[in-house]
Length: 192
Image (cartoon, helix red, strand yellow):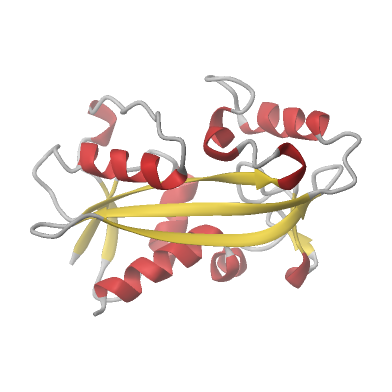
């Protein structure tokens, strides 16, 4: 059975596919590139994920569809960048610019605790939309380590692995990541 994923981010799609469980396979929403992206105006990850899932479920008549919103919350920045994680340094920002701005904002911060948050919203025929949340606690280093992953992964230190998410193989990251936990919760629900 197919779950359609509304993401154009290849890193996220890889993580979703690795976390899927039989009998489900995860495929990108057909013709996603031709669908204009919705504005992300929610104040929370849940609001954005639900808005995206409902929006994308209208296209192509395919269901079930899920969408995800995720980001980094840093305690010293009162939870920022939060829902603005992908565009922290501006609408056209890339990972390097976002990481540079984060390091600049945390330059003098002693408290570097942070967490990754992922919320998946699932739209299925005949059912109310559902959300699944995954989090992972860590801290932000003063310099990047590792070249793997994407986003803030080279700065996000996970104490249980004594490594950043940029240093560990994707298979290992998947077992402990926020996205992996959210997908696992969705898969558990689908296996009911």
